[in-house]
Amino acid sequence: MPETGTVIRRHKDDTLVARKDHDRTINMCQVEVLSEKCFQYWPEESGHVTYGPITVTSTHVECRDNFFIRTFTVKRKSIRGTREVTQYHYVSWPDHGVPTTVSLVRFWRDVTHRRETRKSVPLAPMIVHCSAGVGRSGTFIGLDIAMQSAKKDGEVDLVRLVTSLREQRCLMVQTKDQFLFLHSALLEAYTSRDYVYHVDTFSSVFSKHVDPLTPHTRLDNEFRMVMEMRSLAPEPSHFTARDTDNVDKNRNQKSLPAEDHLVCLPENVPGRNQYINAVFMPTFRSSRGSIVTQLPLPDTVVDFWRLVYGNDVTTVVSLSSPDEEEEYWPREEEEKMTTGPYTVTCLSVSRLTDHLKSYSLALNETGAEKPRSVTLLHYDGWTGKTGGKAGDLLHLIDTLVTSQSAHTSSVYVVQCFDGVEKSGLFCALCDVINRMTYDRTVDVYMTVRNVQSVTRNAVTSEVEYRYLYEVAQARCNEMYFGVYANEDATATSVST
Image 1 (tube, one colour):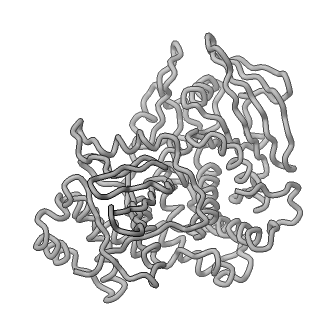
Image 2 (cartoon, one colour):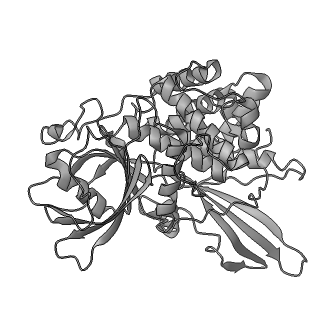
Image 3 (cartoon, helix red, strand yellow):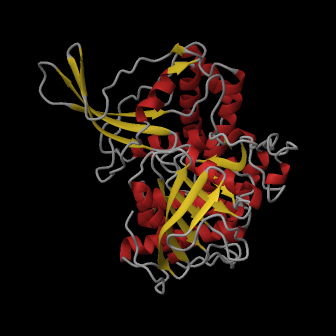
């Protein structure tokens, strides 16, 4: 059987901190259908535990949207020195089902990339485990071997591969769904294999400025593959959004929230149900790190503030233009607005750029002891299929990162007219920029695939796809030369 891995160490300059719901996520992954499947065999962050003659110390934890990366030092009693071990903990495989191909492929890619960067260190076997050590483990190992075969030989026989795995350990790739998923994951990994760029070489690969309005053979071919992969996915269900009680709450009947990602309003308001046109969207650090929604209609303003209050939202990004806006937040200092049980007060307004304002709001619910603080970032510089000047969008993203930095477990809201076109592109931009910052990779292809897995009609034009690369170029210029590509941006970058 081909080699499947090695012990891996973290990047020395990575400073990501695990999110606050770390323990809750671990507990959810150790229990399936009320049955304990895995005992936690590692110490909490910054702690240490002794197991017989072995002492394990946790030295670092990073989090991504679907997995954790933990670094331990392991010391055996009476033996000098320690060994460094890295654990990759994938937390998005559902009970009795399969995950999305994008999330598992990104996890597998991160593991294999770090393995390959340690060529100076002798390869050692990598432990792969799940509850029984056959189904999910077999699928992951199968993907790893299949990709090695595909790249080396240009062909893969998955029936023969799984048969070989089962000859070595029974029930590997345990279910029919896992076997079918292995095909899909292999297709996802193979078709995306050439579309990830390291920031150190990105500028040499794309030496000329990418103009979103000008055809670009390489990027347009990438985009065609994105759309081909999108066409293979089943149509999402919109059962709740199409219900007769909810249909009038949607601005665009072609931009409905998918059932699998639907946000249900947690706060009860008399005469209102739990529906809102909104979905959970993955972010760089969390599988449910943001909520994407449409601009509220006059009748759904109360639902919007229910959404913000009930999900402990601290930051809202509004991508509305003047002709699209509804009056759903106060615009002047000390101005108040009341809708249902909620009162919103504007505390201050700051203009950050020509097209970006920051509103400091106080959100209070009737009977609550004190109001919540909410920052609303209003950007009105969107032009056509692009978000406007790359420097302006980078400033908006950096401002969002700064606003969220004090609330590491907080969900933020992104909204535009229909909750799809501008919001989907903006969410893709955020992910691309964060991966450039922390993983030092430019991965537009898989980012768009990830966004489309939640909001199918997001980023569906070559112009939008090229624009993602244009903004990545601008960030690369800033990383290496200290300035935005758009020198006429009116604000200085806030470091992420």
